[in-house]
Length: 120
Image (cartoon, rainbow, N blue to C red):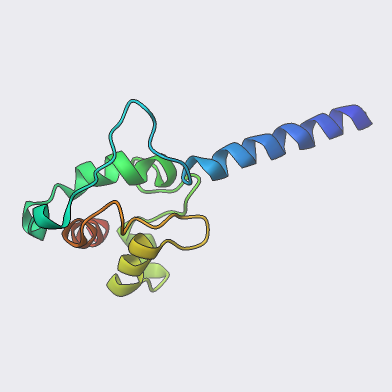
């Protein structure tokens, strides 16, 4: 019985480590990470925020934004927790807790488009 409990703890810890590192590493080999240069920053209204979300955010926050490794970031959840646009913008750009910073991977217009996308 003690061995079974120990095995469960070890497996659980291993799964947690894998889950926590999923958002910390680079994108899987089958996807490409968006890395725009400063000279190619598109206007916010021309940015496909849904595609950016699917590619970069959904692995941790889920395809429906209801959470997974990362928290629920549906519009209702952000609203109920009092998350302002500035808070969301800073979290995307600088990271927070286990979430990595995206300011070196996404242009400012892409971050702004994601903030607007998360509000809908």
